[in-house]
Image 1 (cartoon, one colour):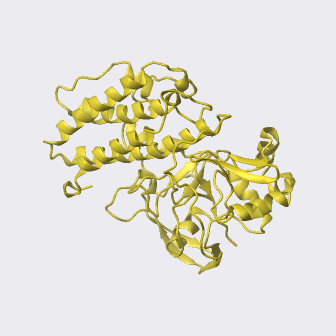
Image 2: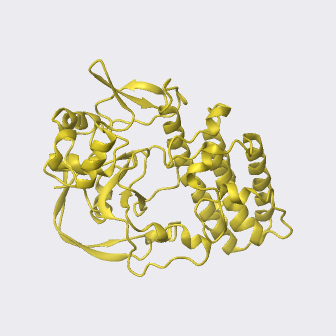
Image 3: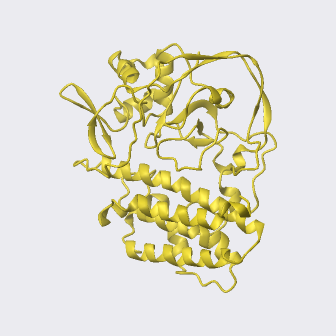
Length: 386
């Protein structure tokens, strides 16, 4: 970010968007945590505020008075360097601080940030601000998907909003895009913002491959279900087969078979499945099994990045076959911000692209998302390779 990019306006726009996401919620929705992977909306509002207070205001704003000394313990996520914190699974057990207190905290910190950046010309601070903005954008996506999980596991299956469109259609015929063998450059290579895990641009050799032009759709996935895909052990990794059986998985997350008709829970409520939209809320295990059933495989993250300019992307986070590992010469930042990515580079798979829940100005061809192989609450989908 440069000073000509109106970074303060970008910050204020981001803060406002986070609160707009929460506007359709009832006050009771702010505290619920159905599973450990889902955080209550109130916690997201507080955590993204604490990030700016901890990493920018406390060390850099002269005379800044912390809003509440206990909030660091409540709203720290995983930063060991910063100190003790509420364990992740207990975030939904906190009725206090109240929702009103958290919004007051947000306003307090946002006001202090406006005062600081109204006068500073320090590029280092602008760089920290940019990280904080994109950190909050990550949590905007998590907010939406966590809200969906909270409401989607309510037996009433209530609607969140009629305005969010999560299932855009695939309007073109599925084709195979041929990629030649050769050496391709991978990794971030512009002055625009990126995370440290995208750095270390390097060359990779790729064998020739063909990648599907579209994401796999609901219709294609229903064919997999009807062909007995969830009952054929030979399509699955051993760990995936255990996951299917132990959790009695028989369809994507949020799918319901009612009188022989498939429905899925959406942020607009329970709706009939639309056949030509990309399947969503798929685990890596399921994506792998479907590809096996088709006699294909998932792309590596390098194949995805090399070919991404030839197909549209951004509707679903796309599972790849790549383990989440550091690029050559990767180095973690000093201090707490060094905990942002590097310490998670184990037992995770890389996802590429972005989703309908990813905020604007927050994705790029080199973005490396990552999740564990069984997780499905994000808008995850996939395309295949042969």
